[in-house]
Image (tube, rainbow, N blue to C red; front, side, top):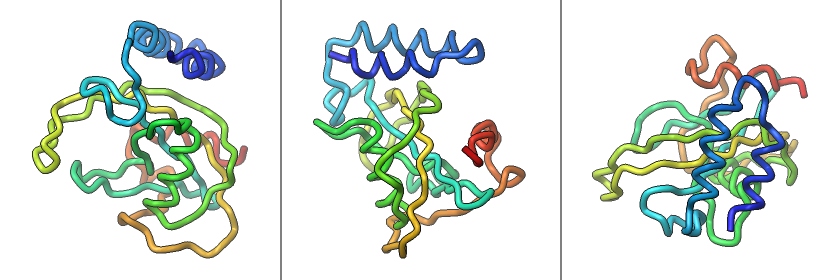
Amino acid sequence: MNEDLISQIKEVVTAENQEKLIKIIQLLESSNYELRGKINPDLQLSASALVFKEDKLFFIEHPYQKELLLPAGHVELKESPLDTAIREFHEETGFFAKKMGKLVDVNLIDIPFNETKNEKKHQHIDFRYLLELEEQEAELAELPFFLLELEEAPEEFKKYYRYKNI
């Protein structure tokens, strides 16, 4: 069921992230549920967009967690994680990304209980894609967004600045 996702993850395994990615692959191999579309209440797929404008990376203010995160969201049924990253980047920032991207990381994220949405604590397997900004006028953004330089970025995202000139 998750063979396509596993093969994508295997393409980004390095000595630095091997242990983490093996754990994620094992979760995918053992899952009997469809992980797209929020069907599984315990483990879901999400995708994040890494988009630079010059030396600055786009971040959004998460509406519930009230922290700066990459533009991201749940992978919908019949949607690829790459398509999700492109869609969510546009929805959350109003800007457009080109319809191609490079998977650069995959993370297992613990999502806390959300009282507002009455969603129980769960985990996301988050696919992170480097996307290229399209040069066209932005539309209305769903969320407050910020363009941050390396020094301003939350610590967990600083490692992604190595991709800014790729």
